Length: 339
Figure (cartoon, rainbow, N blue to C red):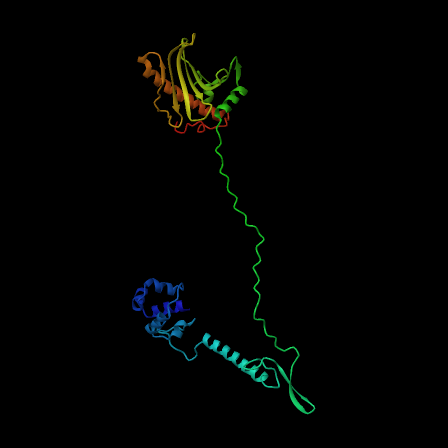
C-alpha cells in the first residue's frame, strides 16, 4: 500500500517524519496521516516522493515491494502487472465502436434493415415480380423495437405510517405533606380520650429520653390543636413542660411553649412562648421568645433551660418517628440541621 511504501522508503533513507515533511514543504502531521492511511498525498506530492526516494511512481503505488539492502527498492524484470483503468476504458470504447460499425455494415445494405443511421428509418425489402426488381415497404414488425423516449415518472408512494408526536413526560406533582392531619389521626386511633382532648403518652425512655419524663402527643378538640409535650417532674412542688405545636399547613415553622409551674395549681412561675424555624434550628441554636412571664432576673437562665428542654423534646420526636413507624421522617418535619 502507498502508506506502507512511504514509511518504508522514508526509513530506508534514514529520514524522520519531520525531515521528510521539510523536504516536501508539508507539515509533519500530513506525513503521519499519509503513513497511517488516513489521507492520501496529492499527485504532486507523489511525484515529489518518487524523486526524493529515487523510485518510480509505480513502485511507490505498488501493494508489495521487494526489500533492498541499500534502502532503495530495485527494479526487477518480472514486475507484477497493474491494472490500468484508462486502458480498460479505451478497450471498452473500442469494442462498442466496433460493434456499432459491424451492425451498420451488416444491416445498412439494401438487402437488409436500415437502422436509420444517415438515411430513411423505414425498413425495406427487395423483391422480384414478373422479372422486374422493385422495392416494397416491409409491413412486418421490425426486429429491433426502439425504446420509448418518454418514461413516465411515478410519484413516490406516500408513507401510510402516521408520525406520532412524542409523548410528553408528565412533571410529577410535589407530594403535599399533611403532617398535622396524620398526627391527629394517629393520636385519635392510638391514644386515650379524656373529655375534650385525646392524648398518646409513654415514658420518654422509650424514645431515648429520661425515665423520669413523659413524652406525649396531644389533640385538643376544642381548639383543634396538635402538639408534642415533654413533661418533667422536678420535685413535689414544681414541674416543667415543653410543648411543640404542629401547624395545620406544613411550613417548617413551629410554635413552642416552655412552662415552669406549680404542680398543685398549674400557675406558671416562668413561661416563654415563641417560634423556631426547623430548617435553621440546631442543638446550639439560641432560643428566643416573643412572650415571657416571670422574673426578669431569671429570664436568661430560664431561656437556656428552655433551649435544652426543646432539644430533648426533638430528640424524643426523632426516635418516636422511628419506633412508631410514622409515615413522615424527621427531615419531612423540616429539621435538617438539628444534629
